[in-house]
Image (cartoon, rainbow, N blue to C red):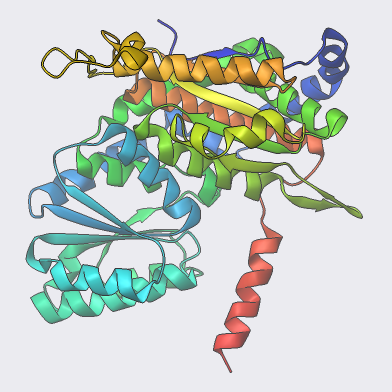
Length: 422
């Protein structure tokens, strides 16, 4: 059974347009091979990293024996990937709480109710200097020390950062005796979900992270073999053809499953931060939108169907939910106006909503595609993640930009530091 299937029949890319992209796409594919072979970008090989998997599982097992809750502190790529894994895969080993923003009311509420004797902290920052993350960590660390004592608190803390004195977090962690899980130096934060950054929290919760990597590995091997015919390459072709040749610079991803809502937020960062760049004197990059089916049919779809032709929409459809509910109306009855729903499952209703929305978009001339997953499990999620990671890499090559930096983000950080230093 395929881990995913990309249906691009409604993407409105002509055969001539696809052919015109082939030379650049072949060059991009070769460039991705070179980045992987040279180890310049390590995310391509994370699905094959048995060391990272072993480390994440062993460290998770240690925490599970002592604690029943893990507070994960991170932001951006140090947060969204782990949140996405937990939402999709769950687990019953440890309760996970994510803190990304230094919002005083949110953090105060957490401090009011946390039982520190049964709680561990995972603080994640590749650079070790992330203002928001480190500020929250210092506050929670003080509360932890106050509750369990300075000598005992170190056993409660795991730090994920680069193993280098250039990382302030690494210096703090080694000085205090915290366990340090190494953030790969050749993997950027937004590409790090299949490293210990995502694997460790997911393993703590009890997710099968080995199967997650297995799915990503299967997809990555298939992608390398398929070349420019892979779903990642085809997805990129459609998105960039729509953007560059037709002015459709808004790219919507819309999963029809609650468990995949955070996937859209993860995609939003990946696509935006990787592709929004200055190229010479041009500002380039499509704008990603995270939508949510069927909820956003009642908030956004009106604009997408009858508004400007400046968007593509990619649906994510589950062919089967692990648990489903049938609308019977056996006891209370169902009015005639809604009797067409009687006997249908919620899964069938969501699928019909997605197909109906796709037809409405197509009838209005708007490109849309659908990624089908057989169900939500670790393997299919791993494949989906690897598809989007590599599609982003293809897109960066086609746009001729540096996919892996974020100078605009760094500029804002410098300005904030200057303000706070006064």
